[in-house]
Image 1 (cartoon, rainbow, N blue to C red):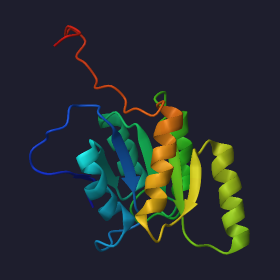
Image 2 (image 1 turned 180 degrees about the vertical axis):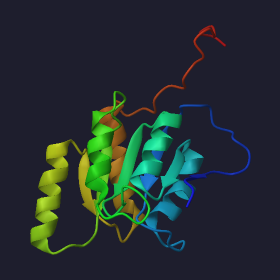
Image 3 (image 1 turned 30 degrees about the vertical axis):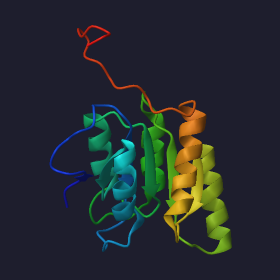
Image 4 (image 1 turned 135 degrees about the vertical axis):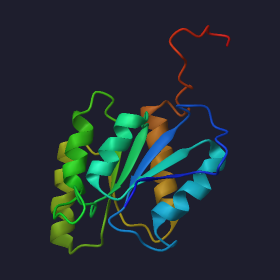
Length: 167
């Protein structure tokens, strides 16, 4: 599968407005939160990039400025491999840009969910949430992330090195 960028044909947003990386464990129908979230956030100036593997996610991070990442814990490192999103979390927190990461977990048994929570927070996740039934949960976490990490404002648009400030 190829990593996808959710947005209409025209690209009305300035580069670097607020870019969110989303990962999902496999291609699902439209009910998956990663299919719904971009449609809700795009009018707010949010660009969503979706990856199906950890490798695709890292490729997107190399190509674009990512301001936040919401990673599904079931995202494999590579197609057909075994593993989970904790590998991707480790890779993202080691990057110089180090985007804040929200880990979205499955509804595991309590004991496994507790281990996942502890490990993800130890590795540097901003938050760990259960796979949401309603998108309000994700939107609330994203609002907290923007408030804490970006002082309640979107990051400013990136400027060209030689461009004047008023351009």
